[in-house]
Picture: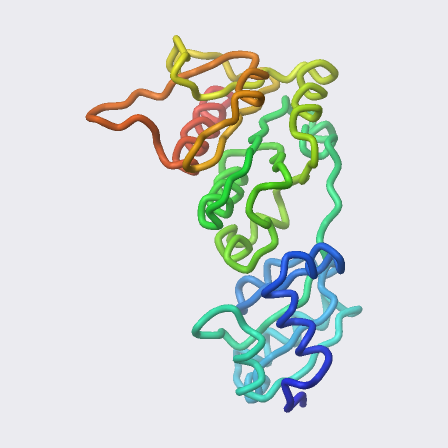
Length: 268
């Protein structure tokens, strides 16, 4: 049992929870909670920690037995209660925590090439709210999106709050983080025939009047400023979402959800 916060493993987990640069350098991130850890593919698990006494419960015994069978390469360690609390980002830890490898997806994965289905992509520019990011990834899975493209100035995809918000979808929705968003958009338009749409005040057609049955991508911008001018100009077409009352725009994750599910509806 690990009983000290001076343990190097514990220090590293705290660093992974708090610092994006550590996550990026090590290509690792932290997942908390029984259900969340159960969602992680076994080959991505490097280490699992559980609070003292967890292994003595029926739930704990069943969980650890299943875990050892699907993640034979991961180390599994018991941790003293006070130490476990220091490792966690949540206020009320659920007794299990895992260190997980980041996945390596390609643009082909995001395009859904291997699925035989037309691309259904969400492009995120400088999204800052962890809840919005997590909700969009989770909704992307539900709406059948093939993948997500995120620029490097967006909120860290592997921060604890984003990971929790995805409810496991982060492991199932292909995603790439790019330094040059403009060149990536140009590539999917010119080389892969993807129509790229932006919700914009200049849009002259409502989103439910447009055809999203072919390869499609939707651009979603920063919560406060929307899409930058340079990126919005790259759209194949502008669209608009109906607004009643005095609203000018919707929450980023709500707008993305509407567009993704309209695409799902049309393709169904």
